[in-house]
Length: 476
Image (cartoon, rainbow, N blue to C red; front, side):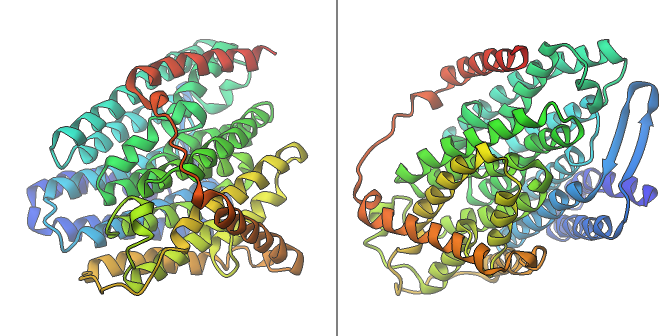
């Protein structure tokens, strides 16, 4: 398994550069990498014990592969494969596929790192690949959004790197375990970098514009897997260090509520999905021990929704209400929306039940409010009119949607214990309450939320405020 791990982790980078030499085989090579990651994830679930690989023992540089990693790696594999299928009939160049696979490899690397310096390298490669994909259309808007993302990300990672150096200075090791007895400023600086990178709480307000203005397949990659590279280390640290877990849970609840507040009032479909990515990341952090399964279901749902959003006749919900959709597209939207709302027979149901069972008492009210907000948000898709003219949709699109929706149906079997009468009634009541609130209140609201906090200069200022908050929390 250890030799196979080394081959697997290096394969995307080798293939990514090989695609530039063999552009005629770009799609096939990219798909091969996605399939290899899916196989590797399957092997992880078959292993009884976690696998640890120590690269530089004196520096604490090591890799850890366990079931938590398996969920995230499987998410990355399925989302990447779906994006490749989606783009297959298009005129995307070898550059796009090469960068997508390099991105895939760097995301995988973050899911197995157990030290801060390896994680830093992986996150920096990820940032560059993400920027190149965001700016791929090469128009002024996308280039600016990409540069904005890159600058915010790199600024956050400078704080992170200083924190990693402080950990090493204290323990002569970069291992995650060294964060436990390191100076409080090390904790604050490292967490700031990861909160920004993962799109958590107000530090993640760069996310809505970046995800909504990117091309649909790039948005699917960003929301489906890229942001999870920032939250995976938070989960790993929370499970490894008990004194850090309460902080991670706190940011989880705050993020879930912040994201859903904006999502229920948003009138732009892609921005609503982007804000809801913020909210769902909060659900993942709120219960670290089961965050892997929730991350899988969210990745499949959000990727499918962004791909579907690219086929809608408009991004404006007001216009969509008066434009009947192709029934096939509407049905796919409904299935994905049902899953993320927690409807039975789809994986989102089991993920929500499992998460709710692993909350602390003080988290329950906040996450239940966020769950109702989720039902309100996705009622916007569910109650759109259907029966419109059939669109010309290629087989690549359908292969992508079948893979993602099929994944939701199959993953539903992971936590089949969720299907008890009590567990089934509560989500249904939550969804019913959300739909009622949508019909009676929220579909009639015309509130336009200000976007000044998303402006570039305010994003940098927000980092300073979050850093002060983190210092306050660790010093209390």
